[in-house]
Length: 97
Image (cartoon, rainbow, N blue to C red):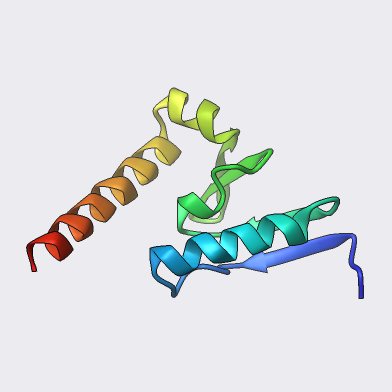
């Protein structure tokens, strides 16, 4: 099968960051030339998307590119900053152990 539309739902939600990177590379190849909807809580998975729809409690609260959404300083920016802080804390904890 060679679908023209792909829907990927939480494709990287349960993997470590190294595996996530490999999955993201495979996803880019798979999505090439197709309309793709990527559903993700891990924002690193969607940061290169042409358009990001930010949904909170079932409502679209923001829309734009990764760069534009960060510049707005809204909900997406807060989520991204929160995930980045958590990633840095986890990396620091691993380095200490």
